[in-house]
Image (tube, rainbow, N blue to C red):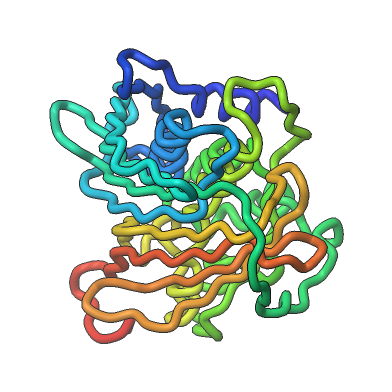
Length: 302
């Protein structure tokens, strides 16, 4: 386990300051606001801490309301909406400076058997054959808006080994292509079962953290846009939904298969499926985000 992963785990280990209230530290990301995946993962930790360990999350639905301030802690208030025989529901509001910045509803279920089927895992190369972020980003640093962006991106993702199957948006600027993207990811080191957050909750929260990193890439690819780091779009997550179908381990390779069915009205929709290396469909993800072109440009990215 590297220092960056240890720091991320510390970030998820919220301080309990009241019965249903938690406080989480924050840190600067590559943009001047709190990374959305961090807030979502911390909120899910807060919700999960108020649920029996034998009921892992099976779904979450969230809205990003305001940009988070990385300079101050975030307070998470948990509402115990329902405790049923099989399902438990929790609602979490994240607050900074007296205002809500994020809202999450999560449902938890105890294990049970039932009907099963799934879509097949799409083809993808061996992740160990793909370039790492440390190999990829410096190679294309000249494409970014300002010096030091590549280093900041590397620092922000240092806890996660994330590898693109095809070239990421910042490499193919000006070349529209099919709105599909794939990445393999896993934590930078093995997790253990002795931490404050029990597994499988920890694995699910880490996957929630990563799920916000690349999901809107496919929107950019459709229009030959490189992203905020290149400076040809301005974007932010609006809402985020996840369904957790089967057990997974965040420290083992997971394939994140992503696509964008539509973009309109300054918004783009991303859909994702996360598969285990063995081909099991573990998670489904949908996110809508603001995707705006710089002022002065008109039309669909032209």
